[in-house]
Image (cartoon, rainbow, N blue to C red; front, side):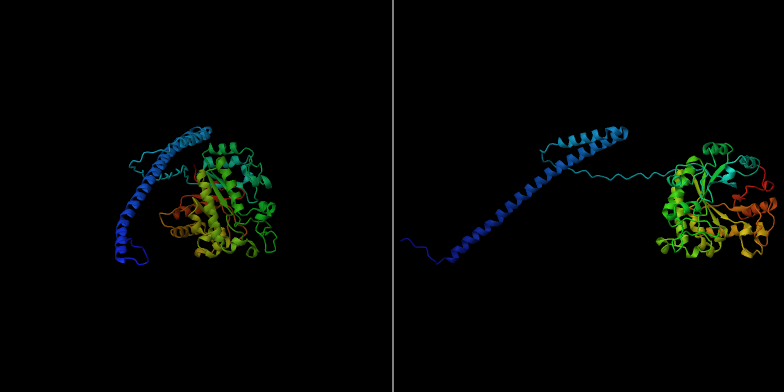
Length: 450
């Protein structure tokens, strides 16, 4: 009799059948998983092989294209087309073989140090006005160089009025008309002096610039009401916080370097001390940056911009800032910080410019040797704050070859007073100096013969 299947189930038999099927399942899954791993591995190796071949071919093509481009610029596009064609010709069919993927070592850029080709000169110099430089009277000063120890001329390139001594390619100078033809042929002028082996320093008046302040009022120092600030002499100044002023100064300085000056010297690299300056509006940046900070920042900017042009960079500073933090704060000149970013720092240590009793000297103008030596000794102590391994400017002071009739206790200055000042420089351990006389009338008898 055929037994009829119904709802009653033999659970023992059913369980045994299911367990048999379960024992077979892990084996099937293992086989499937193994096939998947093999397939994925094969696909990865094929893909890697193709990418590696492309990379090697691509790198070689790029290197060849770069070499061709450097030699023949007009063939750059042709090289790129060849590179594209090479990539399109790569075969998609690749035999799967063990592959060693090359390790790519990044190319390190070689640091090339720019050689400093500047030749230092122990300068013993005189100041030459733009008017003197452009006149036939310059011959007398050339004779002074030929017959005495003088070997340097500090010549106006941008003077106290903001006028530029010779024609130059400066967009802003041309816009405002600040260039003059005082020195008619600058190339011939430079050659004439270089033939005499005269070390040439371009004097560039920085932030005292009444001409620029008038022509470009947006660059001028302003009063709180928006009017142009004028100093005690009725002259305008440009704002040291304005970087457009910086660019103009470096542009002028660069042109001086291009025509053959050996050094660029910034004068009036400071703030005005005229009446009303305390109430002047220097703009938003002045709220977060002191006068000393911004002048030091400009000094660094100027040094880093001009040194690569092959010129030395120097700056004139008040002699009183060496020992007076009050004066330093007023004019914005930090002696130590500025010395870090200059080749030469030139303190104006005219005996007549020190107040009665300074450095323990009752009347400094009457004792030129003593005041010069004491100030420069203080200079040495001040600059010793800079570690020996760090850059430090050479000190080259300005000396007085004029008579300061406007002070109460003065004396006539001539050859003897000049000798005393120079003796004070050497007595303090310094070797260089510059002489100032706004009329370019120097005491020849106070100088050594050539």
